[in-house]
Image (cartoon, rainbow, N blue to C red; front, top):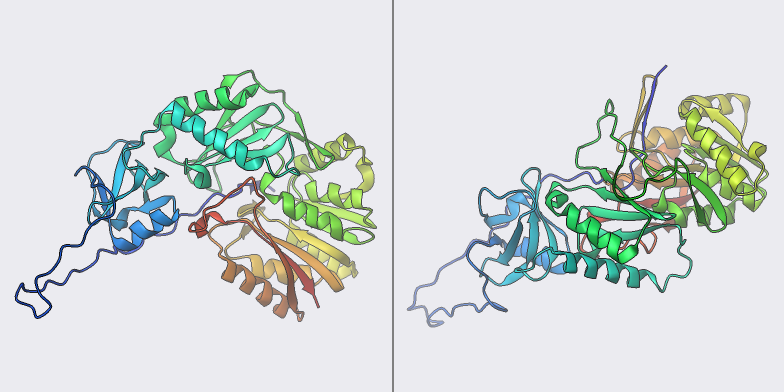
Amino acid sequence: MWVVVIHVRGALVYPAAPVSNKRQRKTRPASSPRGPRRRRRSVGPRVRSAAVRLGPVAAAKVRAGHPWVFRDSFTRAPADLAAGTAVPVVDEDGAPVGAGLFEPEGAIALRIFSKDPEARLDRDAVEARILAATARRDPWQDLPKTARRVFHGDGEGLPGLSVDRYGEFLVVHRYARALEPHMETIVAALEASLRPRGIYVQDRTRPVQPQDRREPAALVAGRAAPVEVPVEEDGLRFLVDVTAPTSPGLFLDLREGRRWFERLAPNRRVLNLFSYTGAFSLRAVRAGAASVVHVDASARAHARARKNLAESGLPAESCEALVGDVFKHLARFAQRGTTFDLVVADPPPFSRVGRRIFSATETWPHLVEAICGVVAPGGWLLAVKNAAGLDETAFLDALARGAAAAGRRALVTGTAGLPPDFPVPAAFAEGRYLDVRLVEIV
């Protein structure tokens, strides 16, 4: 049996580009009873003619804070631009909208980095964004010091880029080709502003395929990190690998869900599905759960979970670790009549175990149906959706259909999402990829 498990958080599935929203103008003769047509005045100065022009809908979205411009939104676009070229963006009347970095391929053509059409992405501009991001996090006293997102580019002025701190090291995730020409500037600004011991870059521009093996993160500045970097979250300690090709070993975006889970765990029989390195299991053990079972396809992930338990001063044998297909283990539990009071399911967007393929956009109803077979009456499911391609409506529908197929009913009693170090513009629904639902199974 061979195993491929892809752990990618917030890897956005880009929607198809919308239909062009160019407005059709109606003309009126000068002799109209309403008098000569008055020319509509633009707000603000006009921008040079080399700018990209957007239709009214696209221009309104960008002005509201959406960081993407789709290729089919152009009413006029310059040709033969290199990736990362800073392009002025205006509306149909030439009024300023912003400035974007050009993407030569894909549905997304521009990533907006400024409201000023004439802006350039130099070191001073990048440092200003990093310092603003640091100040934005200052009021949140409960953010971990050694395991947090320090820069979330889609909401903080560099779309397609994010930066995480693990101990003394930074891991930069680059999702856009448009940022490639600017990486030297970005790395220099991170060094000067945050003074890490080392900076690693993980290239996420290539879409994930089941057969792919990503390259490890590359050291681009400073000293190399040890194989295991200790970090802390709410008093628990985790060992992470900042060079890992997918995740270092702790999903920072799921912090609020883990806190929530710990409050529910005391005296309950807990099942952690797709447990990875055991972050939910550690929370349950510390809370005083009656028992904790965690299931993952990777024996290596369980080994890391045991190390994390020991690092946190918790008994390494306090969790029963099961390796293999989640569905097969759920079927065995059901056959034996084994039930749980609290189940957490945090599947990767895509995974393959043996011949079974899990796709977040298609398999959730079947997963919920199987989970309902092992949840005690009145028990809880903490369901974690981290795939942008599965929207809120489809996710809730999957929860409802899965429970109904098992002859149960799913009652959503709580909702959580991204923590405050992952700021998302209100106009950018695509950026809110994480959806955590507490569901009572009745």
